[in-house]
Each structure stands twice: as C-alpha cells, then as structure tokens.
Length: 303
Image 1: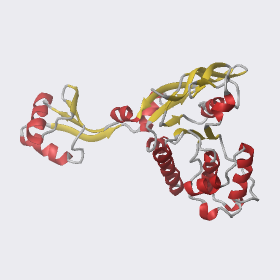
Image 2: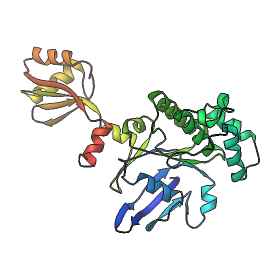
Image 3: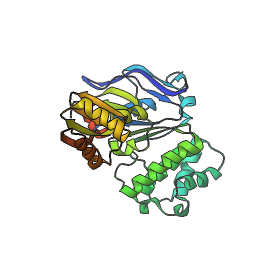
C-alpha cells in the first residue's frame, strides 16, 4: 500500500507540557483525511511538525517514503499547505499576490496563476484588491496559492473556519473535485465534525495530544448507523414476524426483547401494526443512532 505520510511516535513538548503525545498517523495516497479534535487538542502543532515548521521532541515524520529530516526540501516541494490563517498583501490583487509567491517558488510558467484561480473559482475576481475579498474568497485564494506548484498533498488547517454555510459548501466541493480530477491527497484539520464527515474517507481523532483512533468512513458509518429500536414482549417471535411478513433481515437482537432494525426506518407505523396484528406487544419503537459527534464524544469520554 502506498502512503503519502506516516508518523512514528511523534511527540512535542513545551517545557513540562506535552502537546502532542506519541502520535502515529498513516495517510494513504488519494485520502481525504479528516484530522478531528477540539481546539487545543494538538492539531495545529501536529501539522506544523508535518511541514517541518517546528521540530518534534521525539519521533519521526515520513513523507513519500522518506524521512522529513533526511530530505526536507525535496519532500516539501510536493506539498501545499495553509497552516492557520492565510496571509496576503491586502493592497494587491489576487494575481499580484500569486505572482509574488510564484517567483519565490522559482516557478517559470505564469499561466499557472490563471489556472489555479479558475480551479478555485476566482478568475473573474482576479484584479480585485484582496482587501475587498470576503473571508470565503480569501480562503479560496489561499488554496489557489497552495496549488500553484501542483502539489500531491494539501495540508489545510481549519479551512472552513469562519465561513458561512454557502462558503463551506463551496470549499467542500472544491476538495472533492481536486481529489477526483487531480488525485490530490488531503489532510484537513477541523473541529467541525459534521463538515469533515461529508468529505473525508478516513478520519483521525486527536484528543489532549493523543491520536485516539484512525478509522475509514465506511467502518465509521457502520458504527454510527441509524436504526429503529423496538422493545417487545417476545423478541424471538418478533424477529420471525419481521422476517416472514416484512422481509426485514438487517436487524440485531441486542438483548432479550430489544431489536435494532437497520432497514425500513421510515416505516415505524407499518412495523408496529404488523407486530400487533400478530399478537406481539410493542412497548417501544423509536428512531435512534449515533452521529459522528456522538461517536466523538463517546471516544473522548464525553468532553
């Protein structure tokens, strides 16, 4: 399996405070990796170490199969990043801001500027001064700058922070398009669990500096599936009726007299009527299930 990034026991201490503790991450090629945690959990510190902006107190970062410390410049050439808020020259327009960055990066082709502005939907606003940009436009300009050198990996720290729902939706779609069209791998840190849930195919949850879990989205969906919980006086007969009368086979008996149904969730009245017609007493029927937020809270001890 190809890995874009791996960390081994990555740790960062500031005096007596451990900010990131023994962190082991694995980012696969083509992932949109949601790096989730509350403010202060250690997300930004981790991303700074991944970019070589600060040195870890212990552990290693491996990018594209090579240690970061061993070949830093070559590895970083393949990465674009926005760590915290993207800064610009506000009195200049988008083209001039990107031109400065292009020269600093030593890129010879000016056509890349219009290309990335088209990609992020800012081509029509390219001659406006950045001071007149909305927060969402500035975020898109930051992503355009990170894309200038055609990176294979984009590391974005809270990219939807402060955006309105429309801006969040636009940025979310941009991530999906870039992965599909260019094969770019993403690491997206956020405390907005519901937003990351809509784009990420893998999720890492960090809490108090520790990576509690890495999980692919399909597995997460199974753990957070919605279901109808039914409490009856005879669970065995209820299961038989559900199978024979309603063709329900995706269910689970959690304890005597309590069943979880994972299909026909929109038919509680029909299910209730069928059970009662077959002389089964229904004591409770309710739609339930965990969201990603619920799962996160359980994993972090409810904090």
